[in-house]
Structure formats: C-alpha cells, structure tokens
Length: 134
Image (cartoon, rainbow, N blue to C red; front, side, top):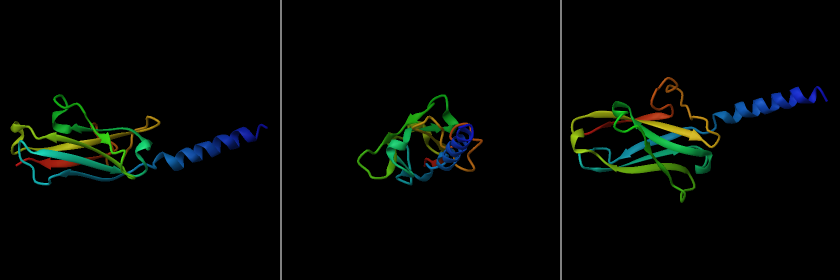
C-alpha cells in the first residue's frame, strides 16, 4: 500500500504536466485592419480546445490601464471552435496613436494561459494585438 501512494502521486503530477499547457492562443485579430476614430471594430481571439475550457478572456489596453483596466470578451457558444470576441468603438481622441491590446485568459481551473515570449508581461500573458489608429 505504501508504494501505491507515491506512484499515484507521480501519475497525477505527470497528468498535470501533460495537460497544463493544453490551451494555446491560435489566432488574434482586429477587424477592420485599417482603423480610424469612430470606427466600430471587432476583436476576435481563437484558442485551442473548447469554450468550456476557459473561464474568462479579457483585454487590457497596455498604454491605458487606468482608463481601460480590462475589456471582457464573450465566448461564441454557437461555434465548434474556441472563439472569444468583443465589439467596440474607437474613441475620437485616439487618432494617430498606436496601442497594444494585451490578451489575458484564465482556464476553468483558474490558471492563467501563458504563451511563450509573454511570460514577463504585466498586462497580458496570452498574447497581444498591436493597433494603429489613423
């Protein structure tokens, strides 16, 4: 019996390692690709897995964390894929500015989704969308 407990622990640990990184960011885009003030834009993000694998997805505007601390995205429950999106209007005072929409995602177990290269990001560890407003 004493040997079964450590073996079971090791198996559970290996299972956790194998599935911990299952959800990955596959695509992130903003449409239209050419943006002006007053435009209505749609941010769409695709992850691997299913919508039920994620608890929440939200954006942080890196350059404006106080004005826009987070923008929640909604899951597309009609899609067979793991799509999350949100629609918004570009503010009139954003003309000629570049900014980053940093992507944050939390899985159903409360673990943050981290993409390689974004581990040290303070405002979004899943990825980013760089935006320029004409």
